[in-house]
Every structure is written in C-alpha cells, then in structure tokens.
Length: 83
Image 1 (cartoon, rainbow, N blue to C red):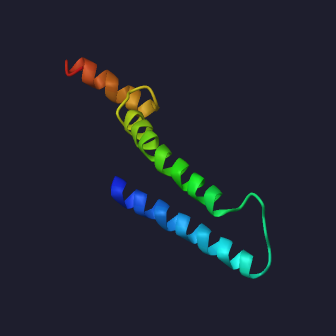
Image 2 (image 1 turned 90 degrees about the horizontal axis):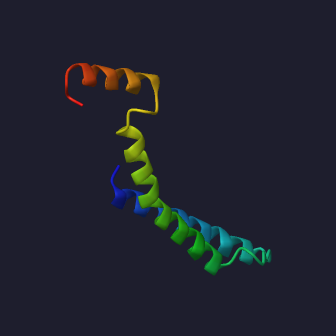
Image 3 (image 1 turned 30 degrees about the horizontal axis):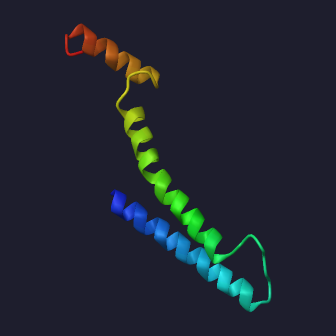
C-alpha cells in the first residue's frame, strides 16, 4: 500500500466522520466536542502521523535488534562478512 492510498483512506475516514456528524445533527443530537473543526483536526493529526508511522515501520523492519530471527540473521551476516 502506498502513501497516497493511505492518505485517501484517511480522507475517506474523515468524510465518514462528517457524514455521521450530519446524521446526528439531523436527529437533533448536538455534541459540543464533535464538530467539523474537530473532525478536520483529527484528520490532520492522522495525516501528520502517517509519515512518522511509515518511518517507524521502516526502522523496525530494517534493524537487527527487534526479534530473535533478526538477531540470528545479524550473526549470519557478521560470519559472512556482510555486516
């Protein structure tokens, strides 16, 4: 999944939250904290967190300190002189 697809899913989620807001307002339910501005802020937080999460995932996948299998791989690379 690409970054662009993730951004599209986040935008879709924001649209869903906006639709729920309109539905609740049509029923006469008014939540003071659940506004268009709070939905936009939440969507922006998700969009800002996306690159951070991708970097953390990349670091996790490419380091040799996370799992036992990775530590074994690191030892094998050191034996072969590749690390």
